[in-house]
Length: 400
Image (cartoon, rainbow, N blue to C red):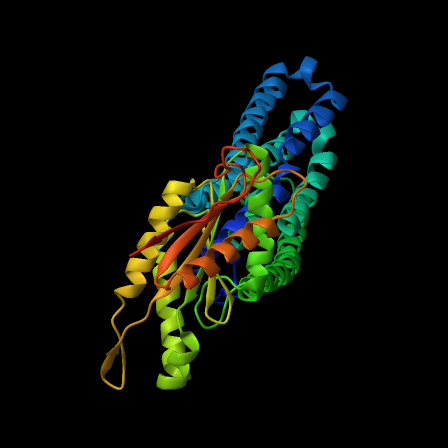
């Protein structure tokens, strides 16, 4: 992950960081959705505006309600946002926040300079820095909002005062400008702290995910390792058992691998293992299938939801593809073959998945005993019972 610019999380080139910042900004802005409307209703009710100026009171309430509805709808869209929507949602959220600030700034400036609402001057003047400081500190993770939000709240009052303001308002303008400088400085520090914390968190999550991936990946072949198998077989066993689906396990073992190592060296042996892992990985196209290096030259393939006949066709494909590998040692072609043991069962609740592995191992031993370079199957759920129903298993072997 690249560190973003220190100015703004939303200016980063990292989509994950921008998406996370969007969610954080939306969550921070959520509490302010009803705030303007609530404050306006409290102020207006206290000042008897529904009776004194109903058009002003209800008209402004309608505008604030509309802005709140738009912001609430935007928040719901962020919750269900797709990655390609992130940049558009960022722009629209910033626009909504700045629009809310500008609206309150215009309203405050009009009420302060209007003599008919002199009883509201104090409370409206107090609301300006309150909204500016609160908005800049809470929403300051965006540099645009950090600078624009307080500026738009104060700007209408500051701009209008030289033309229509009274003498005491000029002092308020000076204090407003000083307040803006302080707000921007404090919000910038808070924004940078957020950016550093967010970056560190995403980097930590990325490293943790990478370490977790490495912990279940075989370093030589790139497929799953024994730890991955131990976890996955229990998950697949439980899932297929609940749904009444078959679970197929294949044990794939290279024939005479020790002789290959002794004759051509361990580097060639590693080449064979990587090539076989590639064949098995390419032959399992579903996301639910798993390929694992179980140990040494032995691989395990887990196929949830795969029936016996489909498993047999896949086993034959693995035998053919590994036989067809064109490997060389010292410039000379070297043929490799494999033996495959296949077991398919519908898991039963209460039984252990080791039964499936043991059955596949027994099928593998039979394939090797019959001459290697072939596959054998063994089922344990009654499909191969004899006529007496005694439950004896009948291994089936097919040579190529």
